[in-house]
Image 1 (spheres, rainbow, N blue to C red):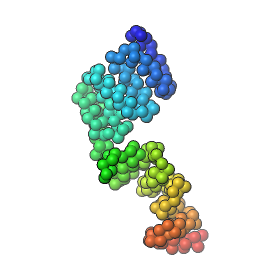
Image 2: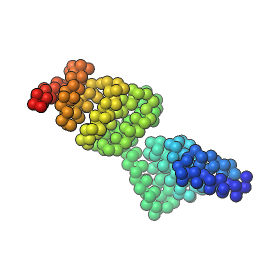
Image 3: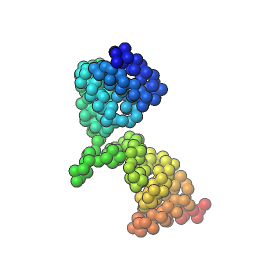
Image 4: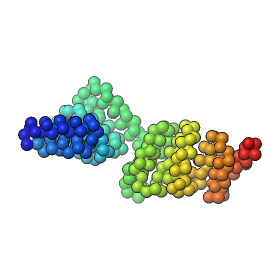
Length: 258
C-alpha cells in the first residue's frame, strides 16, 4: 500500500471515529499503520479509538509507539498519560504529563492533567494485598474509593465505587461495593440513592450493614414502618447491634404516632 492508501485509510478511520464506531475506526487505523508504520498520527488516532472502547492497555501501547516515533510530540505524552490514568497508574501518568509539559510549558490543558494525576496519586492506595498478590481492577477501584472516603471526598469516592461495581467479577463483590457507595450517599444526605444501593446489595447478599444503612436512610425519608422492619432484620443478623436496638425504640414511637 502507498502513502496515499494510508491517508485514505486514516480518513475512513476518522469518519468512523467521529460516529463513535470505534471497532471500525481501529480496523482502518490498523490498515493505515500497515501502509505506513512510521506515521505517529496513525498510532495516536488508534490509541484514541481504543480509549473509546476502554481498552486501556492497547491504548497505552499505541501511545508509547507515538513517543518512540516522535518523542517531542506532546500528543503522544498526553495519550500515554490518559491511558495510564484510566489504568489507575497515577504516578506514571503524572510522569508522562510532566514530560509533555517540558516540551510545551504553556500548554494549560496538559498542566491541568498533570495536577489531576498528582492529586490522584496522593490518594491512591496500595496496589497489592498483604500476601503480595496484585489487586484486580475492581478491588483497586474500591481501595481508591476507600482512600477518598477517608479524606471526605465523597463524590469522588462514589465515582470509584461505581467503577468497582462495573468491573466486579462476582455478585458478592458487587454487594460490597453497593454498600460502600451507599455509605457515601448517606454522607451527602442522598437518602433515595442510599435506599437504591442498599436494596441492590441486599438482593445479592443480605447483611446487617446493608439493612442498617437502608433503615437509617428510610428513617430520614420518614418511612418509619419500612425502617422499623429493616432494623428488626439487623438484630436478626446481629443481635449485638446497639444502633439497631436504639433505632427500634425510636421508630416504634414514630410508628405509633402515625
